[in-house]
Image (cartoon, rainbow over all chains, first blue to last red; front, side, top):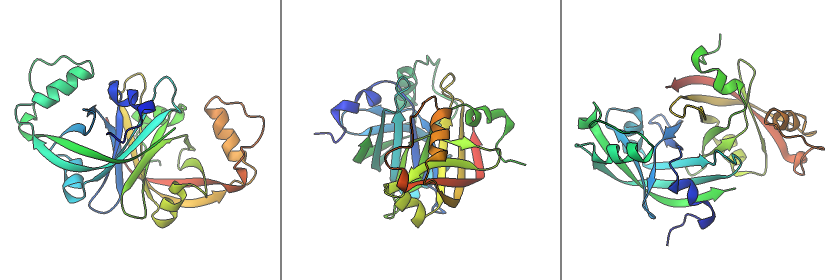
Length: 129
Length: 129
């Protein structure tokens, strides 16, 4: 059973932006909007190994993300979790699927495809309103 | 001079939600949407002393927030900073002003007014797209 409350699952099912917080190697927080996919168990994010976020996550896999409802902005879901796995995405397959979920049609993989990875996050706790 | 880039100041000037990341006493990140005001120098957030976020910030004043443009969601501003001061707001004056900024008309102070505080954040670094 997922720990994501049924009342707020639509926020993960719709192509909304998740503001993903990570911790930098100096211990300070970082947060920015990301595409996200949920398979009913894990959350999936696309990134590259040449980004600050990758340095953060490989040093500290604890993350949190916040999604609010554009139509009712006081309605939100926070998920705290841990990056359980970092999968390579050398063909950009996951990136392209996620781009399509967010309404983008791509002609091919992105220019940074050789560095593409997928963060696989296991939700541990939620808060919501 | 503010470190907030001119190109993205509208994201602080408009009543948008800032996803505020803090670090919990166990070292894990937390993030959720908040009202915010910017006076050209500091960011101001309303909260109470009986919330988890207060415990986080009093233990570790390092924070970050992310705001994206509802009309162009790839356009965003991340601000990393430090809570320089926590001001009491026992009359709820700041809370009421912030509620009005976000389009709410209140009849009076909120029920938790005795615990209300204002986080005064000094921006230290930004990232944007």
